[in-house]
Length: 380
Image 1 (cartoon, one colour):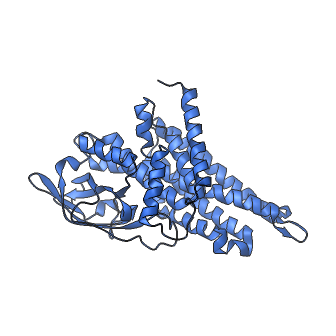
Image 2 (cartoon, rainbow, N blue to C red; image 1 turned 90 degrees about the vertical axis):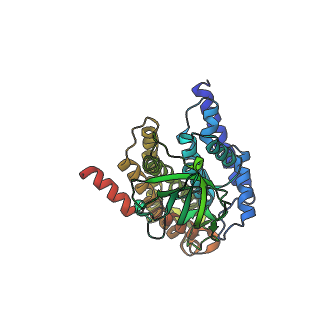
Image 3 (cartoon, rainbow, N blue to C red; image 1 turned 180 degrees about the vertical axis):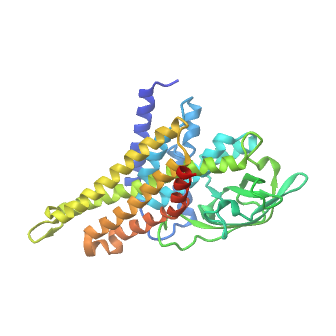
């Protein structure tokens, strides 16, 4: 088994590799347009070549613990340079490959995991048109047959859905009773599955989001991931807590970008014969950005430590994500304000990062839902 020093060196080298890729790869940028399927899949292959897909599985193979802080840092770096792509990477790595690694119990699960690590694209289908934050109100059902399940229903707002090769999907078994929930991993090209074109969102344009329609899709029984030891409801809610922890990396990555751009702009933009960074009001804005960034970073470091030792509870995960997401939106707005008219232009991308930051107060459970989770946990 490797020493802690060796593991640290591997992590540092991998983070340097990710940063260099983001800076030097000509196609990796915060595009205002939807990526084509070909370009998106080429990017995915590049991530696989860098060893970033199924990161936990790579470390498990080396007999090392899953590096949750490293995974979080990678999402943060990707989100700094391309928030939408960072979000798509998170959906694949955290919502699909990670549950497969933890709960797999047959050869089909392992086959899917290996394909996802080699560059196939994964998506997680939970939300529905009438069941967003209220996930247990889902209507998609998997009717049990002799040798299979028959899946019918609709999932929407699915990150990576339009270009997915594998789908981790949650559905009710036979009825709509929440106690009869199941989770399946299936081939996205199966007969009866229809994938929409990417939706037109106000932000996160580089992350394809769409609707999935299941029309009597035959699912072999070995596709089911939950079992007697791990119910689908347990898998789902443990997944949601981990998702919120990792989702917080996106807002922090956005704050990284805003910090660097604002610091540079305030030091170089001249007004009244001097850099505008010498004006106290703008120094105050810079102080706010600095404080929001580092407070978020410190909170998450604590939460990752709690998760690593199995002490992270639901309210703390929701609180960390709530804090980071709302700070990122404030920071993006402040950065745009500091840039003035230049910040209002598409070319400078301040507005794009503001729009991207807005997603994090909605996705993964809205800020209102997070507050409800926290308050309910504290007050019963």
